[in-house]
Image 1 (spheres, rainbow, N blue to C red):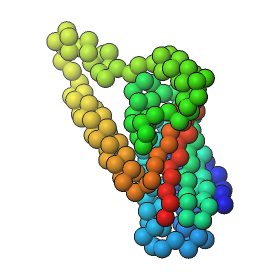
Image 2 (image 1 turned 90 degrees about the vertical axis):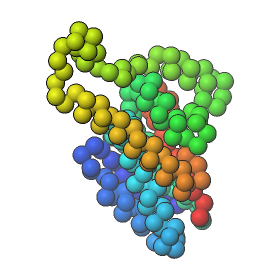
Image 3 (image 1 turned 135 degrees about the horizontal axis):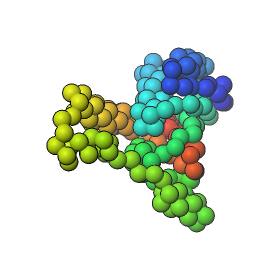
Image 4 (image 1 turned 135 degrees about the vertical axis):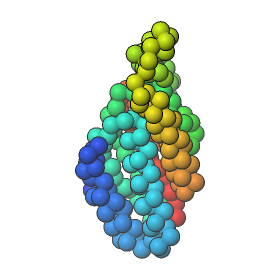
Length: 185
């Protein structure tokens, strides 16, 4: 069985529909309350994880299942920096890009990694002001603290997702990111 495909974006559109589809498929398959909640948590964490790593979200979400086997799918396009790409792949159970399983896939993955832009940890204007001993705006360090908190939150989301799912598969081809969360109840 496959649920409807739900379009999800940064404005929150589609989130409640995705959760409703999750509840419906759990009810349809007579999952017990604990398993139903696990399926809902996996959906929430999957949606949050992708948005927190990529920074933007315009994605398709759906669930496929066969008896007690479930796959939660999320597909999105994103311009990934090397750091974002690494963070996504660290979210995978294997830590590897599932799209790079063949020779051609590994070659494409290598070339995409080499050409991915690299994000700076400290913005150029902040770095220049630090080096020239100029006074920084009051909120500069607050913004850096927020970035650190966000990366800590990413780790928290990953650990929840890994603890209740059987596996998390990530496939990156160019700017197309496919994430599949697998669980057998």
